[in-house]
Length: 106
Length: 167
Image (cartoon, rainbow over all chains, first blue to last red; front, side, top):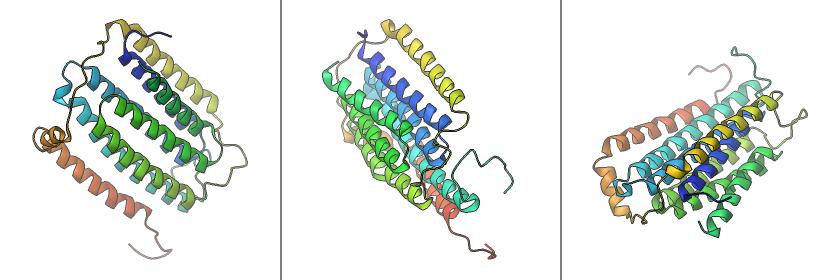
């Protein structure tokens, strides 16, 4: 496989990690694994941002890098709140199996 | 494209695949740590040192530990009797494969027009700090408020409520 530019190979790796994260989020039963899948998807998006920043016309403007740094910070907040919610749901429903959580009513 | 890129990409993808496919949740947490490390190494290869080390600190240092705590607090180490994959796993897999097909097709189609390798930008932490305190000061403050609110919210959500007590 020979690709014209290094940017394309980074984008392909990013697309593959995104698809694996999506598959994890959609196929696993456990709520924690779904959150991990979402984290993988966020990371793949960050890799896209950094790759476009590196090979873009004006890397010294730092725009893509800043996007990625803010995205990492928001992802950390999301992980903390998401895992807190999973723990609370586990206390309530005694399970983290998403197939058994099929009603909104507590 | 050196051999380092292929090695690090293989590490990242193997970690991500192991995360999705392994049965025990603790093993999944370890595998996702490997995937995060691979992504951080890819950031470092892209001359984004600050983002790479931020990735190591935040993801391997904080998120992976949080995930392990959540697994242990929810007794996730026990294997469920009816398997780890959802009943609708085939649909999920088809959607993920479709998304990858579309993304890969778009990348390969536009590959000839993508920019070639440029000179490595030398970005110092000094410049990043200047940008954060100058042009990006408002997003920085908003992220600070978001992180504070998220931490307080996470503690309140996960706090143990005794039965029958009022808030």
